[in-house]
Length: 242
Image (tube, rainbow, N blue to C red):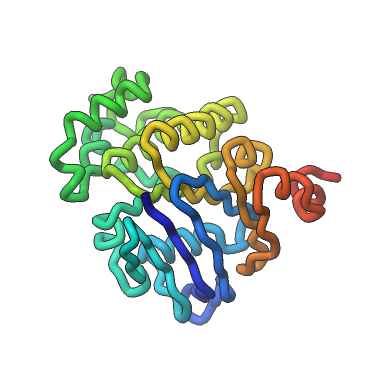
């Protein structure tokens, strides 16, 4: 089982600092949600874990079977090889490649290459629509189908920790509900540890074991469980309209 520990990281883009001494942790087998409206640093935090953004200070510790590695300074390729994979916001597919080609590219890790056929079968069983569209260009799919490809591509890598960035963006409400439910199902089947950034509180809370609220690049509240999030005044004001 895998654990992620983020300790006092600050990060940004050039002279613009987005994250300010952010700390959080994701324990083995948990689904932790990072809640916040657009522009508050959710994506920057996930990109920092993936090595796409380099924190100026702090540590990001990845623990597997008692062995710990600091991810700061690691390349995205190294992070993925260790078993941390992200479903990015807006899917980021290769639009001219077929569904099957996009999924096959997800099997980047050495451990995943040995199981390409097995994992393809699993993805097509999990998302039957993708099996029907396997030879179709990804760019010609609907938004919901593209999100399925993005999630399935991540699963092709045999991840230990799954980062999910704004899975609700651009989807109709019914599709958002279905996708959130599918992430919960896959997490249980694959025994994953999940960190999900999301601004749709009502959907995120359905699968959260606990979570954090990030405001202007700082953690303003930590909910020890889903009930603590639901009863928080900040949540009621910004998400529930109370």
